[in-house]
Amino acid sequence: MDDVKNTQFYYVGLILVAIIWGVNFGISRFAMEVFSPEVFVFLRFGLALPILFGVLKWTEGSVKVEKGDLLKLAIIGFFGVTVLEILVMYSIKFTTLANASLLNVAPWPIFAALFAPLFTKEVMTPRLAIGGFVALIGVFLIILGGKDGFDFSSQYMLGNILALLISLIGALFNLACMPLMKKYSPLRVSAWYILFGSLLLFPVTLGGWQTIQWNDFTIGVWGAIAYNVILCTVAAFVIWNLSMNKVGAAKSNFYRYFVPAAAAVTGAFFFNEQILITQIIGGIVIIFGLAWIAMERKPITAEVSG
Image (cartoon, rainbow, N blue to C red; front, side):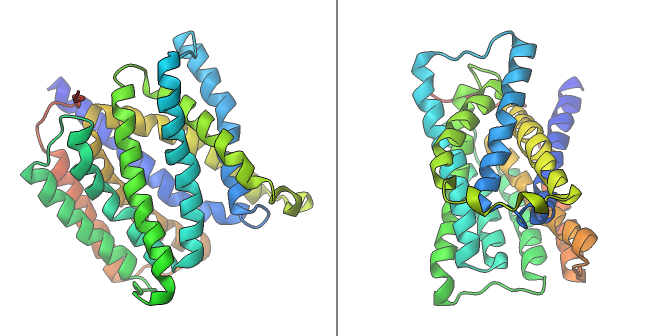
């Protein structure tokens, strides 16, 4: 009975993080008024670092990792923070928001499930496959049920490819963290790969600092910065990695399907964007699919292969 309760706790954590990330699609628009995307992303991760390492020192007594793991963490940070965030910016630039949203979100859990056996002993169970497929239908209904449909035009091909790469790299990034989280806490792993990712991201920002209009800072801008640093990065990354470590990477990543639902609700709340009946149905379908996955009675701690 305790295992069931613990499992439910971690699933709630995954849902909470997905909602936080989904809401950020709307909140970040306030910051985009004064920051270039690359500067804002750097501030998001850079300002989170003192908090992450401070909490790590306070809760665990040290911040050290073994020298042999620094290169692994640097590679994870490079792909999971530096490359991934740059790809996000350019995928949105070279394709439609609907295309980017769909290709960023939909294939990610599928890639995670397919490649999980390379990093852990997780397997694609029938319940996971069925629940994931049902939830995927819900994602299609939310994104394609909006005013902007998916566009296969050749002019968006580059952006579509970049968006698909985000799903692949993001899934491999999540899976690569799993072996390290058997050795260190999710907080320690998160702090170190964000450190390396931020350092490697900084050169990309050099052309964007002079464009900042410091006099244009509003409460909305400061709120967006605080939300991104405290909730989207510090809280979300630690909770996600902790929950993923307990539930398993393959299962956890299907909970990213809550992101477009939360983004649609945020758009309606902050920007008066219309929510259509198709999108409401999509949200309900996602809930059914992910609830079906969560009902699977499996050990809550994923074993690592190798």
